[in-house]
Image (tube, rainbow, N blue to C red; front, side):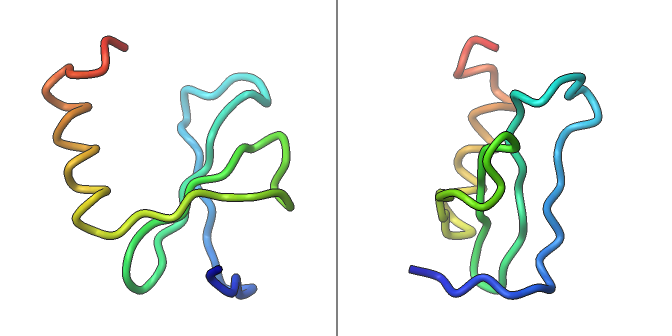
Length: 65
């Protein structure tokens, strides 16, 4: 498990108009994603390569958003 420090900057989309959003923080070797409704709860960790592949998929419309 990654030790979370106080210096993390969690960001959420400006399109988030309610509390059912995700937040993302960049760490030294990747990214963390958490549920904005439970900021003290669990999070998902992704390497830079995994995050880049995800972002490429979002931009290509692979997820049907």
